[in-house]
Image (cartoon, rainbow, N blue to C red; front, side, top):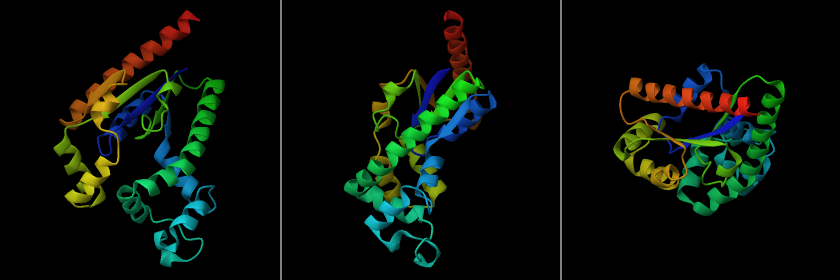
Length: 211
């Protein structure tokens, strides 16, 4: 089974590419969704994070046991590198463990030729070496800012702060095996993702044939 990292900057179109890959029958792991589960009430990351930041990050009247307000927490983390590192130190090891378990399960079941882990922070977390291939999705700076503002309902200054908290696309592209430019129309991005999906499937099958 070919193990693929799907990464790129925030609001650059990773979800569009991931959906194309899903439709091709690839096994998908979404780091952001797993992160939500880990930080949900009762999850292993919930207690340490609430203890560190207090009830101010909780929704639902800020009562004990209320869910973490991800928008409030994101505002803190994107403005404070130390706070961001604290949360990443808690969440990343748990998410990596979950990712490896899911990949091993799918491989043992033989359900897919390609496993794809979608995560914005693959490069930042030093996980490139855990994958056979890396796919980076990017778009031009103004398109990224506009999409992020529209998606999260935030102003330009906040959008720039969130983008600056991640590694620049140019650095991620350096470790990429495949690059998908999502700056244009949706149909163009889908077509590029389809092409990369076909190449990945060919590589996976070629690897199996050589065993």
